[in-house]
Length: 134
Ligand SMILES: [Zn+2]
Image (cartoon, rainbow, N blue to C red; front, side):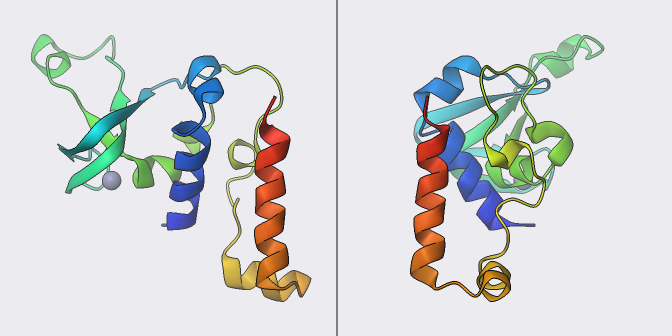
């Protein structure tokens, strides 16, 4: 699983109020805690101590006992599950992260492929972020 996707997702979703306000996901809601909290991730089944979580929305078919319990997915698992990560509703242009399952490409490969310096690659990522701001 790509940790880069997870960090990029966190950067896009949790650090940007506009995304939190305008995007919704079909199965999960992004939750950002003031402090790190313990939850068991429903995907990797590990107890993780994180600030950013994806809370499962109550499912209509869930029984009462199930819906009483909050279920969370760690941001890393969520970021790497392409079916979940694409927003259900949004306005404007989708950031690359939500249109390409392979974005961002692995750092080393990306550099070799384009024969770019680390500095240039970093600059491009910064420009990517700029573009996405309304
Ligand atoms: Zn997980």
